[in-house]
Length: 237
Image (cartoon, rainbow, N blue to C red; front, side, top):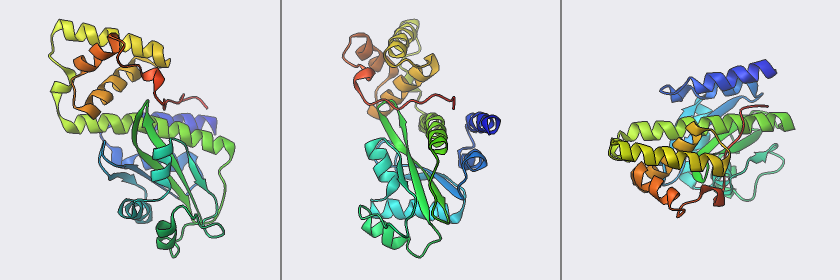
């Protein structure tokens, strides 16, 4: 299983540009029957990025329409929402959603937040037809997969925006500032240089600023990501 999980992480990382297939590696290693990846609310808009089946897409659509459900809670609170038996324990926090899926073939649903540092992006929903629990290993692996997917979804949004001005003027001074700020964020968050740069780029994208502006805030100590909720996970089991 360890090898197949590593393969799933590698497969996810290679799906940039084919985000509609993000569900495939998940179902290869997590014993669930369906998966959906969605962005939620204002930052990246509300959209189903990938769904393994019409039912998976429908579960996302219902949550969007009703404004409640496990994906909303997972993103808002930044932690997994696990409901192993929807039939025996209809969740009172989602009265409309619970009623809407009562006739659907869904026994359990698990939502994992898509976050990147302080950026709340959306959620990964998993479901099974029969009630069941995720083991601690499966929960941990699902969280790691969600972390990998978060990077892909954020890169997708930045790529689709097609706004090169987010990078700031392409002069040597701007590149040097961004490089220096990347080093600061790397130290603040104990993450890779690639993730530190993506966090700067994502923050700039969220606020409609240039990367140079964000870099200046970091270097002037007006912006410190370590003081904000972090959402990074290792790709190791």
